[in-house]
Structures are given as C-alpha cells and as structure tokens.
Length: 163
Image (cartoon, rainbow, N blue to C red; front, side):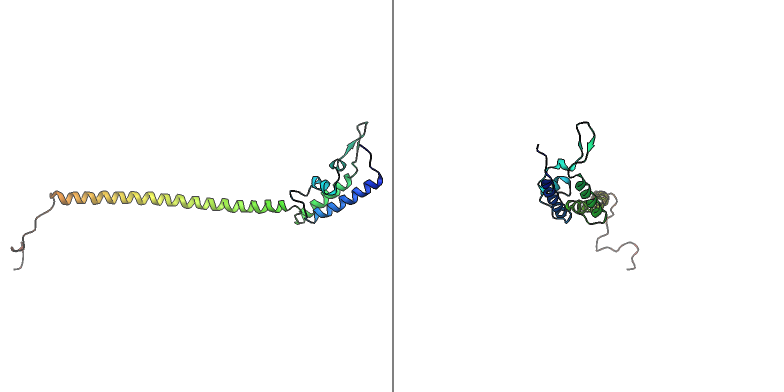
C-alpha cells in the first residue's frame, strides 16, 4: 500500500474533523452510530488509521489518525456525561427500557387482579352450588310429605279458634 503524503493526511484529517462534527451534532447516517466505523465511513478513510500500528521490530507506533480517534472518543463521552446523547439509539434504548418497566408493572398488576377475580369466582361458584343443593333438598322434603301437615278444610273451625 502506498504511503500517504502530507497533503493526503491533511485532506483526510479535515474530512475526519468534518465527519466528527456531523456525528457529534447528532446528524448520523441511517444505521450509523457514534463510533469509529461511522466516522471512518463518513470521512472516506479506512479505520486502520485510527488504531496503533507495530513497527517491524514489534514496537508500537500511533496510527495516522489515532489522535483524532482519541479526541472523538473523549468528546462523545463528554457529551454523554453532560446528558446530551449523541447517538439517537441510546435515547431510544432508554425510552424502551422505561416502557418495558411500565409494561412489567402493568402485567404484575393485572396478574394480581386476575388471581383475585379467580379466587372470587371459585368462592361464588361454591356458594351457588351449596345454595342449589339446599334448594334441591328443601324441594325434595316438601314433595315427600313426611313433615307436612294437612290444614283443615275451610268449612271446619281450626283448633282453638274463637268462633
């Protein structure tokens, strides 16, 4: 791969800074995030320039744009710490977490109500069954004639009457 000239590095650095400002202002491309991949894509450079390289002898050397990657990371953290969420997906995640908590509370409340109503239904059905059994017993007793006395007919005076 050919080495970059100083003019190429300067042009790339200008493009990276412009892309950095675009991302930090919240103007992300579709599917993009506040990360180095999106930064490199917007600037039109490869991501490898943002990372540490190794010399032939194994010693580390900074990438061509590593200082910009560190600046970008620091500025993103500062904005997040200040409460200005750069990545709209973070805001969406927070909103969905709050909505999920609300839904869980509603489900818990409904489960409790369902349990109470089920217990009430069981009690009501058992009481109705007991009342039905008592009504059937009384009907059977009334039709059997064992405990029923015949009243005197209308023409005769009842026992102990004043007439």
